[in-house]
Structure formats: structure tokens, C-alpha cells
Image 1 (cartoon, one colour):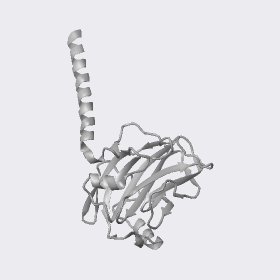
Image 2 (tube, helix red, strand yellow; image 1 turned 180 degrees about the vertical axis):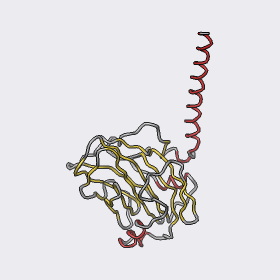
Image 3 (cartoon, rainbow, N blue to C red; image 1 turned 45 degrees about the vertical axis):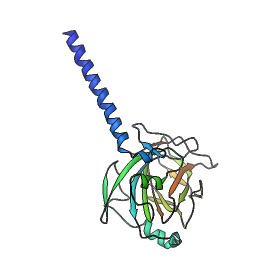
Image 4 (cartoon, rainbow, N blue to C red; image 1 turned 90 degrees about the vertical axis):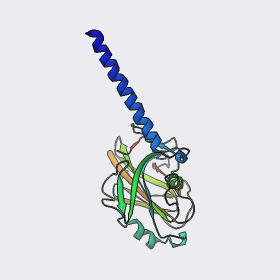
Amino acid sequence: MYNFFNKIVRLFCLCVFLFGHSSADAQNKELPADINPYFGPVGKQAVMPNAAGFIQRWLLLEPISMPVKSNVVFTDSYLKEIFHTQYFPKQMETVPKDGAIVKVGKEKLKWHALDSKLFNVKLFRFATSFKKPKYGVLFWAVTIIDCPEEMKDVRLSVGSNGASMWWLNGEEAVMLEGDRRMVRDDVVSKKLTLKKGRNILRGAVINGPGMSDFCVRFIDGQGKPVRNLSIHVK
């Protein structure tokens, strides 16, 4: 009886092991090969920002097609209209799930949970890897930031190619206007407060022709990166 019970336990453990590995393999296989130099699948555990404070874990929405042939149209008034337009239901209210589908006009677009392998998030490579439009597009990005305690007087430091807008907990934090290249710490927000516990950071990046990417981190009053944060997408 004891031997029989041991066999059952070993069989159960083997099934769990194989199922866990097959699930991980399936997750890896879902990502196109072209994306490998730039992104990897999201792990189960939350992560910290990298050594320089940059946030690398994101939910990215497949690009929304926009009638933009040149970045010279990126005036403040144009960008504010674009960034404040609602493209899909509960756009600023909920955190999307990995694999969720939203309808934007006639397009059905999917959310992808990804870990950037670089300090900057390569939106152009994200689009091309999934065979999506890469020019004249609007990208949406969302991540969750858990703080061990309230952090006052931090600033959101952003670089993007091209223009972008960023919201912290539903409030506009910073806008990067005009036709620009991605430069780290290009624009820094006013003083912000990260709440103890869950904070939601959202961004929208629009670009016409050319490459698209962004980099984001929080800095303290001395301009040093804030790293004692827990980043996840669930």
C-alpha cells in the first residue's frame, strides 16, 4: 500500500512538472522569433526597475493606425486631442490582461505582456515582430507599480520617439510634444506622489515615419533613480 501511494505521488509530481514546462514552452512559442533580441515573456514574479531605474515590464497594445504621414503635425493642440480621445472601452479605468482583445474602429488589437531586454522599449520592433503597421501609429502602454510606502516628490523622467503622454493613477503627469528622438531623461514631470501599494502608469506614443521607442523611470529629489519598486502587470 505504501509503495502504491508513493507511485501515485511520483506520478502526480511528474505530471505537474511536465505541465509546468509545457506551459512555459507554450508561452515562449507564442512570441515571434524576431522579437527575441528586444523582448521576452513576462515571468510570474514581480521585478524591480533595472540598475538605472528604468521600467522594463509592460503591457503593450498592438498599434492603432493613425493618418499621420509626417511628424510636423505634432502640435500641442493636435497631440492633446489625440491623447485624450477614447479609442476603446475603459481605456483609462482598467488594467488590461495579457492576450485581451480590444476593438478600435474596425481593428481588433491584442494586449501583450512583455519584458524589455533593453532599458528602452522598442515599439517599432514590437510592431514589426507581430506583423503590424509600424508607421503612422499610436501605441498604448500600461504597467503596475507597487510601492512599499508612500513616496512624495518623485518625478517621472521620460524619453520617447515620437511624441507621447503619460498618466499616473489617471492624472496627466507629462507630455513630450513635437517630432523628437528618444533621449533618456528628455522630459521630467512636476513633483508626483507614488501611493503606498498599487499605482498605475499609462503611456501613449504616436509616430509617423521612422522608429518608435520610449524609456521611463522615476527619479527622486536628488535626481537619483527610484528602484525600490515592484513592477508587474496583473
